[in-house]
Length: 124
Image (cartoon, rainbow, N blue to C red; front, side, top):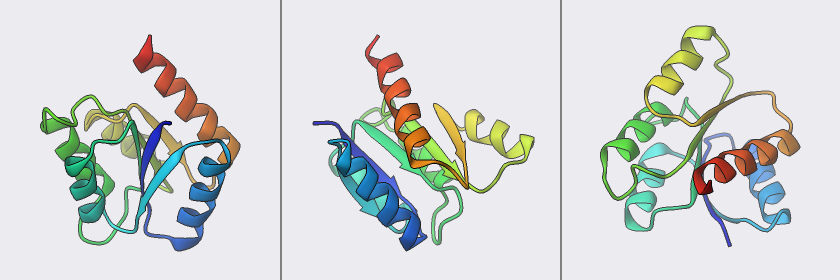
């Protein structure tokens, strides 16, 4: 079973994504802040991380940087899920090591498809 680490401070979005991913057979570890998500990833690296950018304490960009800098988590695929849709925001997301970038509002079905595509690229 694929384990997904989800960091999203909006409870409604976190619950929706968790529900949809579990429906698709994913194991989900959901967190409301970046620090908790980073600690979990370091303790037990997930198969994939979905990170909101704007969170209290530690942003998804910072979590992404930290995951990429740690040899134990540097290969974990990362999708940023955010309302930041400016071209410069997207460039920043990819420059810190994200594998994909999904803009809110989003379709949960699209998110699952993009997760599957990222995982397929990693396994190929």
